[in-house]
Every structure is written in C-alpha cells, then in structure tokens.
Amino acid sequence: MKSINVFTEVKQISAFDVLAIRHKVMWPNKPIAYVKLEGDLNARHFGLFANNKITSIISLFEENGEVQFRKFATLIEYQGLGYGTILLKNSINTIKREGAKRIWCNARVEKEKFYTKFDLIATKKKFFKGGIEYVIMESIIDKELCTD
Image (cartoon, rainbow, N blue to C red):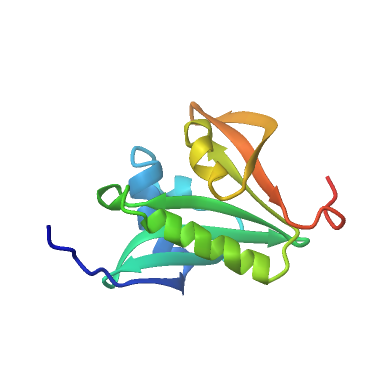
C-alpha cells in the first residue's frame, strides 16, 4: 500500500471562517445564525488545514483564566483521519502553555469517551440542547487557582 503524505498545519482563523463548517457538521438543518455564538468576535478560532484545505475547527473562549472550547468540528469526509485529534491536542497544549487553570467543554454524551483521551473528566452536570444530551467535561490544570 502506498502512503500518502499530508501536510497539516494549525492556524488561527477568523470567526467568519468557522461558520460554514460549524453549520455543515453540527446543525445543518438549522439556519446558519444558530451556530453563531455570543462572544465569537472576542474568541480565538483555529483551523486544521490538511494540504491547505481547512478540515477541522475549534473556538476558544477565555474568562478569568478558564478556557472553554466550543464548536469543535471536523468535516464529515475528513472524520476518522486524526485531524480533529491534532487540532484539539494543539489547542490544549496552547491553553496550558498560556497558563489557563481550567479547560472545559460541553461534550455530546456520545463523544465522552473521545474527550477522555485528552485528560478531560466528565462532571455530574448534564443538559439537553436541540434534543441532544450534553455533559460538561473539564481538566483542572492548577487546582489551587481554580474556584468552582
């Protein structure tokens, strides 16, 4: 079997750049306004590019030293190739380097096992949105600094 070389790169992108992928992957049956988030303009957005094509996106929202990642998505045709994993690892490493005390997300319950690979732990907090069950998952980086 011949191996295919794929050049991957993580780059910061604009809030506008994430909307199409958010919409296509997460909520294709809703209007695009449904995937816009309050605070998008102040958040940092990153994309993973494979051979110069954006395949995965993530948005980071920071408040008081805690970072929530939201709207993490990979285009369906690129899922299972490790692109989302590369992007999430890169984002978590960036957050840790910058000194965040807590990383967290609202994970779809069916994706809980995936996030445990990144040292995120499910909390007891669950909720429903759009008929889908979510669990809050987190990683406490410095327990002395983190308040709940």
